[in-house]
Image (cartoon, rainbow, N blue to C red; front, side, top):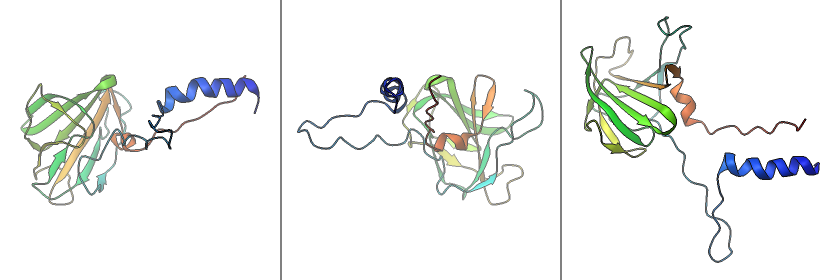
Length: 169
């Protein structure tokens, strides 16, 4: 491997992968930290996938629908702060702000949290209610994600990031 590429890898990989903690006794390093995101409902069963709109007000599905029994515990997909927990257009919604400007929403969810509360990844935020339009089972959670005004497929949060090293030119 050319020396220049090795130097770039040595600079870039720690930024992408994060530091590797060293063990105090010189043994093998500690295991990698847990995933940053978890599914808000388990098991993960998608009934309707993400369908990005062509324009801010165009048709599409700005999230994914996940099947679950009514009364299932819905958890925070990632650590953040509750920015809203209440009714929107007659449906109960919980919205969380995450670092990096990401916001996730969960509906229909009877909230067990309130605005301003910090939440940890995997902590309960409410219970799933029946009544989501178009749901083919007893209850579906609509889980959405956006950064700014752009909607994202929230399922991508559950996948580990792909590290790509491009040739030095």
